[in-house]
Structures are given as C-alpha cells and as structure tokens.
Length: 310
Image 1: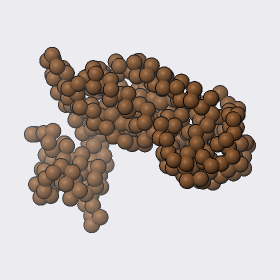
Image 2 (image 1 turned 120 degrees about the vertical axis):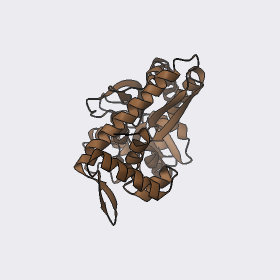
Image 3 (image 1 turned 30 degrees about the horizontal axis):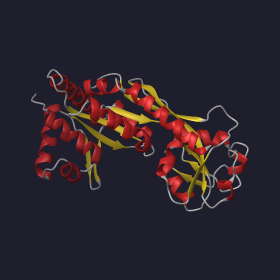
Image 4 (image 1 turned 60 degrees about the horizontal axis):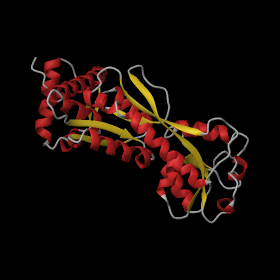
C-alpha cells in the first residue's frame, strides 16, 4: 500500500469541507484530480470512506474512524519534522495557536512578543475559535496550543492556568451606573436589561452569570456568544453585563467599565492553555516553556486595569 501524507491531507480536507469542490479550492487544486485521489485512497483501503449524494459528501463509519487516525498521523509527521529542524542551531517551523476573541486583546500580543524574542524563526499560525472547538482541534492534532475558558477535557488533552482575569461590569457610558463611585452590585446591574452568555458559545461565563444573577427572575434578556458582541451592545446603550477585565482594552465609545462587587468567591475568570498529551510538537514544548513569563506579564496588566477602575 503506497499511502502518502498528500492523500491523507486531501482526505482530511474533503471530510472537513463535506464537498470536493470546496476542498479543492482549499487545497489550491482542481476538482477532478482531488476526486481521483480520494477514489484511489478508498481502493487502497478497500472501504468506502464517504457517502456521496446531491448535497455533498459525508463520512461513513469507516471514514469517521479513519479521520481520527488521519489527524494523529499528520500530527506525528509534523512533530517529526519539527524535531529534525530543531537539531540545527536555529529553531524554525510553524506552531498553531488558538484563541477566543477576547484573548486576542490581552494574551495574544504578549505571546507574540515572547515568540518574537525567543523563537524569531518560528511562524505562529493563529486561529480564532470558541473554546470547545479549540479543545476538539487540540485533541485531533490540528492545533498545538489553545487558550480557552475552563471546561471538561478529553483524556488526551492537558491544561495549565496562564491567567486569572478579574471580572468587571460593563454599562452604557451615559447611564447613571457609569457615574456611581462605589463598585456595582448585581442588584445595580439588574436595573438595566441584563446581557447573558450562551451556554454553547461561552459555557464558563454563562455559568458565572447564572450564579451571580440567580436571585433575579430576568437573568438575561439578551444573549450573546462572545464578550465582544456583548460589549458592543452595551456601548450602544442597551443593557449591562459582567465580563473579563481585558475588555477594558477595547476602549469602545459609549462603553463604561466599572469595578464590580460580587457575592461570590468566583470573581476571576481563568484562562487555560490546552495542549495534546499524545503527540505534542517540539515547538509547542518550547513555547510552553515560556508560559511562566507570560503569566507574570498578564498579572501585571490585570493589576494595572484594576487600579484604573479605583
């Protein structure tokens, strides 16, 4: 059997796109040769990997099993290449890093500064994804490191805490709450329509919102999947919400960021770095070695933000 990594990458593209035409565009090739590669792969394996119909292509049970194996194969090959490259004096290669939208404002700039200083020849490939999507990508070897909110992890994914961001209150700049000197309480915020988080999009923040506003019948009249979406709504003068302090860096016109007094010990939002336990890239290993320094920088910034709210 002459199975090649090129065939495997073609299979992964079709499986993820569910359509040969879209997969061909993604791979910068035409559709006929891609179809022939998939057909040849199926002949060599002796099974049908896809169900084909007018709407596209979906995986058969054998295809689903092979996709998991394909992810592991490509991850192992990439890690092997990285090890060989690192034998030289200069470290180079590509490391895939995932972020949630709000993390791009506090964690991403600092991480890029560290990689620029310590790994100048390494390319950082950034993917903005929801936390659950990042976990799946790390588990399947499609992402080296992800930055997520705490959640249940599969057995082959590890984590470490890199940041604990204080919570703040977001209110419209023209509201009376924006002028209040004392930290805002949940009762204060509930005088405005509450903006809550989707349990699918932001499960950790959604649970925190539910706990903080448990005594209010209307625990959220507007629902958003991401912090940035909610901040934009508040900036338009609609409602109030709790959010990680990093949102203060947005400096949105119409948005006021205020200290918050909460009746719970959970007044900080952890950020986890997640990475594979099975086939970790040597570049990812090198990157993880700088995370103590990253955490120190983030702690200093959080303290600066809190001082600005006093």
